[in-house]
Length: 338
Image (cartoon, rainbow, N blue to C red; front, side, top):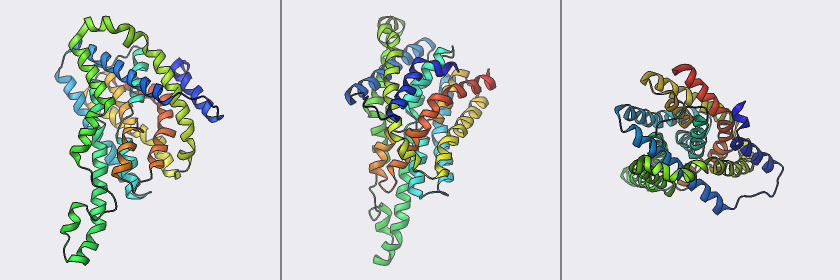
């Protein structure tokens, strides 16, 4: 109940309600963009300061390895389940969204955990960045394989061989190289700012923390509340798209994150990860991307329905994680690992 009385969460609920009653309340796009960049910069600084204090250790490498493993496990499970109930292109796209991560959910969870005395390690922002790309790469590879499979019979009939189809040129959509996906992921402005701020925090250490406290500490909560108000308005606008999905996909959007968080908890338990890191790893596994994945897949997999993977991740999974999931995952991690 305490999490619902958090001002930032209450502003999110207010934004959803304002959007549902069709209020003309709106946050200008440029201000919304500034807020998101501020939150990532402040989060990167906090992580860098904490990492400078703790140092790089084998335990940190184990946590990052677990994050990368989850980034492959979650979309693989999602695709193999979803392909039974939708087109394979839609299954690949939705699996990519749920195998990737939400930076806003991560920021909100970090603030929540710090508020209840569970401070995650400073390396966890790196885990978030590492978990962004694998699901997208898997989805694009699956889509290219499907196009090759569809184009090969035509190539055989036309030329007596399938060589022309192997490059994906006969498919109905573009081919996107893995190198380009990785480049766009790690040089994306938001991610680059997060990593750069983390490097600044790490290099400046305790002295930098003292200087930046009014910016990265005192202002953080208010900025997060303002940003979550905007996110609530956006969620309300996407309820309609989420309701159009089939019952199975809606059930996946609700229950899938719980399963993914359970897998993360199992891995964290096997590796004996710290409770706060495990809780944040569960949040990352349970979150779904509604910014980076749609931006890439609109071009890379045009055969998939954007309103499906965008509507489910933003209209259903995001608010459920913000309102219920984050405190639930924290409680589960504390119960199992503490």
